[in-house]
Image (tube, rainbow over all chains, first blue to last red; front, top):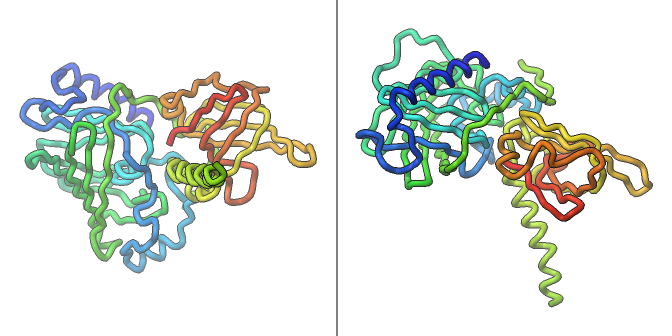
Length: 228
Length: 128
């Protein structure tokens, strides 16, 4: 993961050098597409998708969920990636969005990961499952529509431990509501684990002047991750 | 005047509760700490860990009988703390302070920090 981050930072730097005009924190358009670049922080932090319960779980998923103890079982306690969509929804640390013609890149401070949304291709066939899946995007007016598949089943949807399967399909509609506000409307479809799609909106606020900083999950982590 | 005085503590408690509810962070706070309760202790700093993924304050607190209770408080990540005005040398052993936060559910003298008040009256809140 650390090597991946170093690589990621180098890749982002290289792309900046090639396309300097795409960097900015204002509402002006980068080329012909909306500008959603900048450093963003969740407006409200809520680690649970269903704080009052009621997730539409399939029977096996409900059994797995009930057997989960967030104090000891959260993969993130052991510094494994939060994965998508969790790091888009419930992380109280900022993310920076970069735009280049072929990609939208999200560099996240909290988990120190990079998410790439490919704007110029379809999903590859026979995807190897990963924590963040494979994301492709297209612009529909002012909205970036992102389609993600190819997830592994090692991540939780939220801090309570809601599970998912490798069949999860995520659709996001990301839109700059106003200069200082970005909204991501997420639809999580996973018929293996849930009886109906889960929809959630996360709102982010622009943080002018902020820079993504170092964050080292492994440094002084006092949580006793027991894993399962 | 009396009414105002009577109302103030209630407002303060509600404010504390609302602050408490806004300060969960990534490492399982919801499951480890009682976010509906707030506790305040005063004591002497023995150590300040300026580390990720969380910073920590260790505080010697005298109980009613004069015995030392060793409290600790968990803070946010240092990047967020820096943005909130904290520095690596904000605290040093021997500093007196009051700290307020959400107590551990298991009753141990551990809290998820909301804020500190230094001896000179300066307040610092933990970030998210």
